[in-house]
Length: 252
Image (cartoon, rainbow, N blue to C red; front, side, top):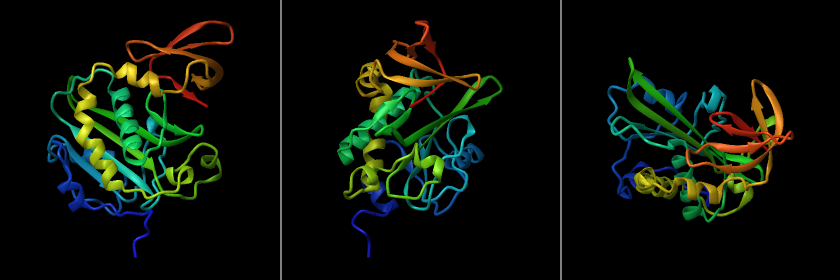
């Protein structure tokens, strides 16, 4: 019997409710990493192919960190872009699309930790990994992966402090098929939007919040000032120095 809170990923349902140009490939029971799979099959996979897995043995996040992908406890998804690759603010747009989809599907307000983690109660529920593939100096493809913790699961001691699942926050029915269809059916709309900064500002960690900034393996506490028009985070140090962050890391 299917637990009402655990609606199975279903390829037929995903395909029948798909109004986008993205193509759902057969779902893997187990895989090392959905991003790695696309990277290894770049030539044979078509533009906008979507790879899903119920379990990742070597899920990856930013800075090649491990993203815990416990068996059938979330959404572990990657998709491939091989055409029209010159996006602005891609990190931010993917985060906005995922944020919007969670809100619309599950009525949960997450907030975005710059540049593209989704948070609930100061804990991470979703992460996004974007990788570029070049043929010599030409951009050949973009691989975008995201992991979303949905069902209650056991994290190790360190992750218990920093990770959360949607079900821990709100006990309700979670239909992963619906979330994925919502995301991909609206993804190109978000990718084409010019007002990404406005949406991101409205849903990011609030201004005046103090966060930890890591630079060269050293941490210091800084205050969030704003997000500029280039998608860079503006922060202020304890010495009242204003810094513009490009690809640095912040944490709560």
